[in-house]
Image 1 (spheres, rainbow, N blue to C red):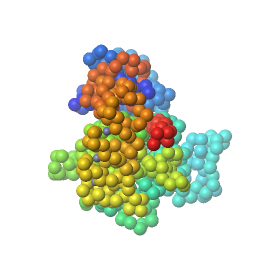
Image 2: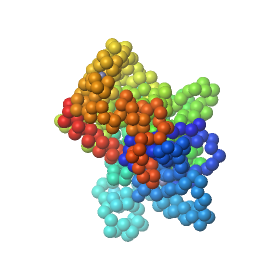
Image 3: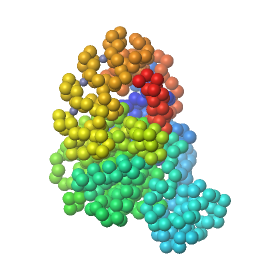
Image 4: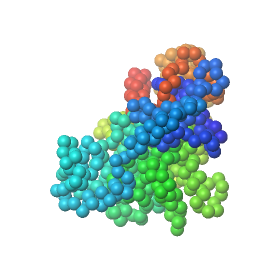
Length: 492
Ligand code: SAH
Ligand code: ZN
Ligand code: ZN
Ligand code: ZN
Ligand code: ZN
């Protein structure tokens, strides 16, 4: 199977496709982030482009500069150097070492417990000297604080490839309550450290039924706080376990639903990460899960919740036809745009995509969500059922209005434009090519919905080959939304 995803909407990604081979006999070379992905750069007028391997996880060359043409001969010396480079970029301690350091740490009296802010590491007395010039934290590193590593560690924000946006308490509690109510007793947390943390906290409180959690995340700082049965250093863009077979074994063990303990996977990947490699990894997880459950039907999918912005709906549904998008708006603590402010809620564009039945997921009434009996799902307050569309059509939480000419509901700020033959913002650049599809020039759809994605693009759109924009960051999503917001303010 070959899957293509073209990122011609991003700054530097014009004409870059991702190629995913299943059962390919060629082994992709590895960078410090595990096996690389195969990309294809298609030039105008060419049937197929030149293929190259690049890092699966990092968008920015500064973070990982791996590059190799598919047909390139790599010398022994270079392979050797690469091997050494990969080795040198491993975490300073193994997971086993981190675990024993932690055990020692908690035996220390409070006044000897220190955390190095510069190195983001818990210090043992023998490390003090080495960190004497660093900023350290030494006040009351209690057991309670150690149970909340997401508050102790500073979120990786500036690093393009894994910016961390942590759930606001409200969203995190909602998620966990929802999953508990549905009877899940095991949660596979993929890039959701705060959810993992909350599950463990609730287990300690003992007020609800015990739920097991396994965190898979590329942020190895978490191996200081969690044992090998609770955390795996993992890359979700290539389904790579940095801890090798042993870690992959922990993951497989976790998927086994012994004594009816149902498993659900919850993931919140970096925004703008390429959907297809992510979907490919999640598919592999689901296949592994199915394989472990004995004789269930061969179509069964692992229950999954994928948290991502609503405008990715077509791409996610293309990969998982069983997924629906829920209206619930996910809020973050450290995200200026998506958090629930003092002045009332800013609409968050982040949603849940899931293969769980939408009618079973009760969204909080106190936040205005209501049940639509016709759609059989909970919807936002502003999302009014349209008899013409026979759906609750709003994606962004605002009330959309039905356009007779377009035969569908559109954003409230849009008006039907007879010369363009579609609804658009009142000040849209009327009948100008650039409002349509980059790929084929049509005004009827955006490139995302282009039926002819593999065709070469119009001249002048292709830019530098060097880097696929496969993990545009939450930051750039933020930038975009900022722009979008400015626009909105002007026109709505
Ligand atoms: N809202 C979540 C955090 C989401 S931020 C919460 O509060 O729990 C994205 C998360 O994905 C971060 O924890 C980040 O470390 C992780 N991540 C980023 N790139 C990754 C990759 N390639 N593989 C695995 N995890 C990754
Ligand atoms: Zn890399
Ligand atoms: Zn409805
Ligand atoms: Zn309608
Ligand atoms: Zn219209």
